[in-house]
Image (cartoon, rainbow over all chains, first blue to last red; front, side):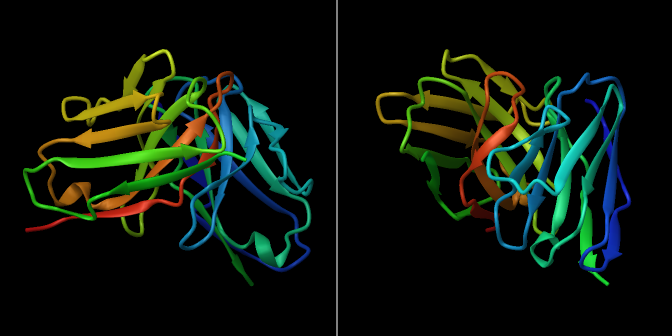
Length: 107
Length: 118
């Protein structure tokens, strides 16, 4: 299995801050890296696929970058509705695996 | 707009079989990868497996001996069977749809909680 490691596990941010979450794969996964947002009691929602492609309907303040083993998710100016848990996922090989999640909280 | 809805027993006894069905509305199952994912209470996401519309299946090796995913295109449904369940299988189970190129999961059901308890 390909291990996915996110950092940090949690962070506190103020509205308007720039937030960056990193995800590292245990082996190269090309650009088969996806980012999801999950709010309490809700299903995850796809934000970014193929490392840097914005999913239709996702706000443009979300962006992704990286390839190989190191990836980042950036929120350019965090909004109140962005406080949630974020997961990266590799879809390069089965079993597909997720990072442990990063909880973004209000400072 | 495609929507997914899980259904099935919310309480399963240890050693018995967990069975869930996902009904697809607003779209066809004759494409894409139809996927099951679970999330234990307060924990992260675990990919269980998927089935392609061609019938090809992929399973998580950690569950492979116990899991079966099937697809009924005539009913626009796909199903999950997990045998010999234990308390460790207690989780929120999601059905979902993954794309054909990058395999990202773009559509999710709302999830259904399954508790394993006697």
